[in-house]
Each structure stands twice: as C-alpha cells, then as structure tokens.
Image (cartoon, rainbow, N blue to C red; front, side, top):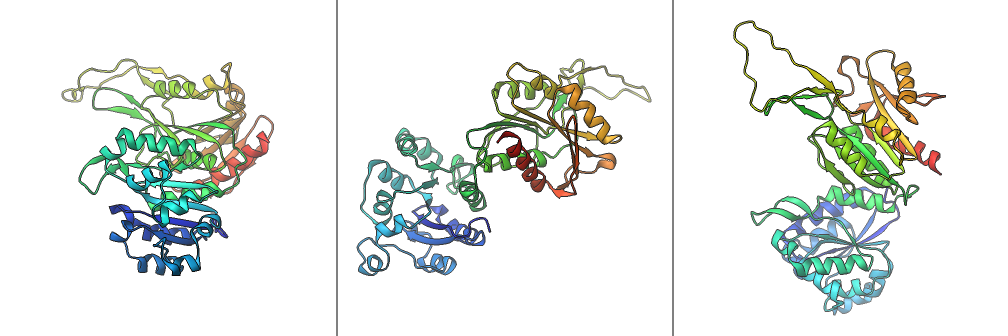
Length: 397
C-alpha cells in the first residue's frame, strides 16, 4: 500500500466539513497509513472522538491540559513523531492562530512545536476564504513552507457557491500518496494536452473528435506524482480537474496551440489530445437551418494547425516531445512516419478501429521512435501513464 509505514497526525478543527474526517481516516488507513487524530473543541461539535478513535484504531487527543493525554503522548511527541501533520479541515480560526504563532489549545500548540511537513486543507464560506485577512494568513503560512491543499470550488453547506469547499477525502489521500512518492522528475516542467477540440460550425453545432480525456488526465497525474510541475491543457471533457495539476481549459485547436505555446519553455510535452484536423472555413453567426426537401448542404473546411509539429519544431522545443496517434490501419508504419514528419521523439500509437479505446478505462499502445518499436500489453490508462512516466524518467535522468 502506498502509505505503508507513514504516521499521519490528523488535526480536525471546527466546521461542517469535519464530518468528512471519518471518511478521510478510513481512506488513509486503506492506503496503509497509521492515523493519530487530534480533535479541537470546535471539531468535536461536528464529529465525536469515539467515531474517530474507532476508525483510526488509535486514541483521539483533545485537551492540552489533560494529564492523561499528556502522559500518553505529549504535544511535542505528537508533532515530532508524525511523518506528516494534516490539518483537515482547517477553520479560519485555526488558520489565523497558526499564522500568528498562537498556542492556546492542543492543536495550535502541537502545530507550533512541529518541525516536519505540515499540510492544511481549508474549509470555509467563500466570503471568509476571500477575505484579505484569510488570504494574508495563507500567504504567511505558505512562505513558511506550509502546504495548502485546496479549497475546491462548488456548492457549500451554507447554500452559497464558490471557493472554500473542503477537498474530497479521496483527493486528499491522492495528494498524500503523491507527497510521499519518489520525485524523479522534481524540478522538471511538463505540458500535456488532453480531450477533444470543438470547432464551431454555428452557435449550436461543433465538429469534434471522440475523446474522453481520460488518458491525458492519467498522464498529467502520473507526471505530477513523479514531481513534475504540470500544465494540463484540456479540451471539453466531463471529468474533474486532476489534483495538483494546473489546468487550462480550451475549446478549439487554435486555442490549444496558443495555450501550449504559452506554457513553454518546458522539459516535457505530451500531446494526447484528439485534435480536429480540420475546421469549417467559416462559422455561421446564426444557427444553420435544415434545407427543404431532399436538398443537400455543402461545407468547406480548412486545416487546423498541427500542434505537435509546431511545438516540436519550435526554437524553444521541449527536451522530450511525445505524441499520440489514433490509427485504424497500418498503425506502426503511420506512427513511425509521424515521428519523422512531426519531429517527435516518440509516438504512442493505438488502434482505434471499431471505436476502441474512446471512453474505456484501458488502452493498448505501441511506443514508436525513429529506431524502435515497443508494443505494450493491454493496460489500464493509469498503468499506461505510469509506464510512460517510467520511460520519461529513464530518458531524462
């Protein structure tokens, strides 16, 4: 399990999201972590010590001045023996205490005694989160090396919509796993394109390629987990943004090229998007009406820019440029031709005849370079991403 042997001190402060700490504890333990909970007085208004203790299979520590708690595990030991201190959720109150060095309860005293990595996962009303005082406190903590995970956007328990939502427990666990994972690509930057592009025909209709964006997102996550700073340029997809990855949303091929160019310089560029090769020569300003009877309608198309070739031939070309090729025939031969024509280092070719791959959780690819062919077995898209990152690490280190 990814967190085997890791001891996580989980500080749960006050706020409606505190109830999610129960799921967070369970998911952390499923990943192999040992979880030691600390519960503030405010947190105990939303979740009971008994619940956390039963799930963590450890005592819950609450009171700085409890002789029993101090005898079992003093606040200094709580801080020092943790591989990671995770404050989830952290309220605006505890965040302010941390930023100003206050220590008037067990949680804040333990945090002040910490000499290892500390992560906070904020949860509060959007207006509270946007308040200059809150933002100043966050900036202060980040300058001191505290990691901030979230908050997310979405519906709040108070009925408002905005930034301040507690990140889902599964996302926090994914971040914890990535935090402890080896970072062979630390210091490297990567650009990944993903999903389809939509080329407008009129205000209602678009021309597009079939793509779920799953493979591109899996690659972005794997690169981030390996320590790279990743920019994901995504066409229209129905997927949540990957945690820990900067995501840029685009619609058309031209927008995707502009975003990719803006993300340079980079060490790695991976073009997994299914970009439309053509676009309508003109876009109608009004919805096109059906012709009467059996009359036909014709449309003229022009080529879209070749994003892979443009970036691969740019003066500030990334050190490693990788493309994907969805083919229905002569898969390897066509992929090798693209390596030369587009100045790519590798092409990952897959056979999409019959609609295979699109929307599925698995993929079968062949890694093609100018001089070699490496067929991979059928793998999940996450496994394809992991294997690709392994090859990237070998190539760059």
